[in-house]
Length: 208
Ligand SMILES: [Zn+2]
Image (tube, rainbow, N blue to C red):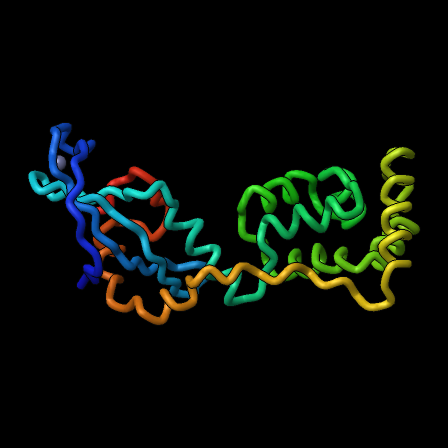
């Protein structure tokens, strides 16, 4: 069963059968699995009247949308927040990785949208508190270049001095996806028919 909540006719081109068609755009609620949790997301698909192919229409990536919902639900940092925490101390990805004791590649992946686990989330989140960074600089600062070390130390001291209370991580986006989760039920068969719960990207066929 598939929810059809919107239908508009647009003149378009069907990439599936390669013909000029009046492709309709419809809203689909997809249920994806993220770390064993079902997550529902809403995407627009174009539907070809001739070959019935459904293609993600709005340039969104369903798996990334599902990650956003999962992050919000599990209170995980968003990639933007991870970047913001690192930049507060003028740290490079490499320097941040050295201070935390995490791989540089790992930090890089998280900042580009990979989903961090809860342990790594806590480790990065701790750096929101400048006193934690001061402590890390004391213990592991020798691994950093001297310019990186002194820049980070200056910023951490500044921020620690500004406030005695722990600085708050920016509130996660509230983009209405929570409401979509509540609405979306019964799209499971669509995903099952797609053959895979993962890897649906913009322009990719959902069904044939
Ligand atoms: Zn077609």
